[in-house]
Image 1 (cartoon, helix red, strand yellow):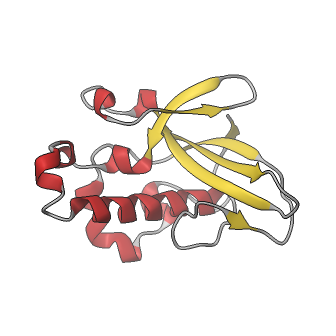
Image 2 (cartoon, rainbow, N blue to C red):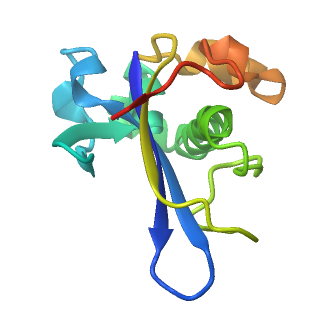
Length: 153
């Protein structure tokens, strides 16, 4: 499964960055594409339709909203999605050291904006397989390795 990992400088005098890992829409199971939020990532060459990690890993029962809220699935899905996103980002951007993917990260240096396309395991509906092992989850479990083969998006 291809993921777009990006680091974007936020305007200002201090080097503050936004980090995102998004799944290409073409990688989403066709049966659930119409159910996920669509975001667009601008690469140097083209704008790519993508979706969030949480929407990708969500179990089928998540899309039955009347069951999701009483079971507390929304909070757990957000936590698992943010942790998986952080693991992916850490494998590409070593300066991103937070346990969960942050909204913005202040750095002591200015590495510049970057966008990479990387391959992971298939994350479609992977919540039930990943959530129980969340505290022990590592990049290798997602098919990623430090210095993983990455390509400019």
